[in-house]
Length: 331
Image (cartoon, one colour):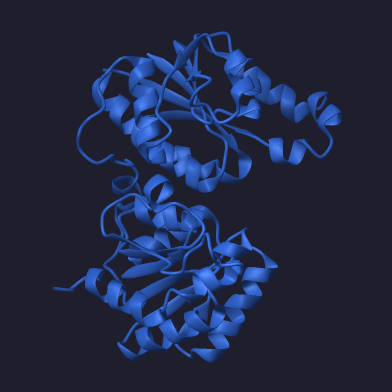
């Protein structure tokens, strides 16, 4: 059985889809997947052993000049790949108009969430089979249920398995006394104050840990440099791709993350991580995996008029206490 998966973005959403593939591979003998994904995240599906082919698209880039893109060679090449092999099913795991557009290009039975549970209702027009998946579930569990109901097997009762750690960790070295600070987010209200990162860095370096600061854009690079200037044990990393960051995470003792895609990557790799939450729901999209701690702001997000104050209410001392408890060697 060959299934096409459409889940294009964002990084966290793509990662949240992986356990559904692991479930299906265990439940359906011989099942194989191809995956349509945004070009920036094309590495991620290829890490899963049940994925044969990744079809990158660039809708984020193409939408700047949509008519030009639809006539261009990149879209023609992607559409040809969508149609050049037979599929037994195509599953829209995103539930948006843009993903439904991709699904509509594929001559195969099309599955997606029904109008009560899909993210954008008009997307259901592209599906031949509409699946009810309750909204009040964690994103990983929703996707596991969508796949199970589409492909007709029972969702396993155990925690979802992302299925990528063993492949990426093959031949890896031992853990180093390094803690990654995953400090970047596209949404300002999710950011933790720079001063808190500096305080946490001093606490961690005082306990013998080095700090590593990845970044993905000039603003994050500037913040990393300021933190490093205040904490001598903190190193600003060179710009890395996702595979390089995954390799670094696998060697690290642990990480601290705001609600960001890299935090979900750390969780998928079972890296001990404390994740910090202000405006978002831990219950629905919290980091999913082993050795994960979720710290929600004690500030009332409904009352506070200052979004920054919500994240500021999470103290560095509390974060360090929680991180110490899950680091390798902790009791």
